[in-house]
Image (cartoon, rainbow, N blue to C red; front, side, top):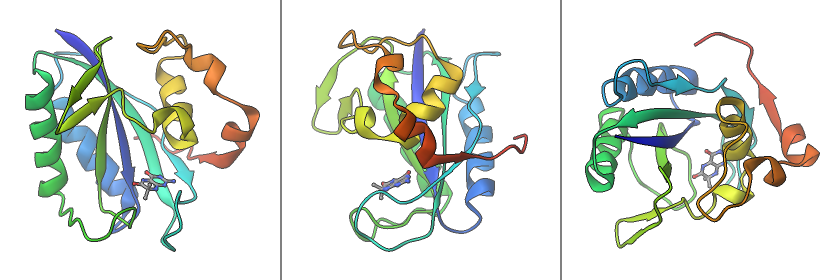
Amino acid sequence: MTQVFVALGANLEDPKAQLDNAVTALSALAEQDSLKVSPYYCSTPMGDVVQPDYINAVASFNTKLRPLALLDALQQIENTQGRVRKERWGPRTLDLDLLLYGDEIIDEPRLKVPHYGMKERSFVLVPLSAIAPDLVLPCKTTLRSLISDKFLAELQRLDNDH
Ligand code: ROI
């Protein structure tokens, strides 16, 4: 059994409901009582495409699925929730990114873990630190050392329960 971290993002078609539905779907992949979900955060889009603000969160759970089986399951959830891949860095109804798979470093054509952009993304690191403040990345960097005041200021935490 391995502890995994998954980033959730949505900015189309009621993004909060997209995340709620994704959390329900993720709970089916999680071993009993292992699912943790961060608060939801509103963030401005990264990248040059003009698009609505995002709702972002991070979930963690223990799973017996191997990495590629987990990737398949995450992509199936994305597809079920109507994801259409149109433009690179464009808007999406649901994005599920596998951030961390235990301490493993995975470098396969379909899957690179840790997720390549996670260290630079406030909308990943801030929710991650809400559920795993003491996390140490496989490269031995502490999560705490990556989180700046600037990152914290970039996100607006939604205070609704989910
Ligand atoms: N920007 C934000 N704020 N949140 C995301 O989840 C997100 N996802 C993306 C791109 C388009 C890079 N920008 C994002 O894929």
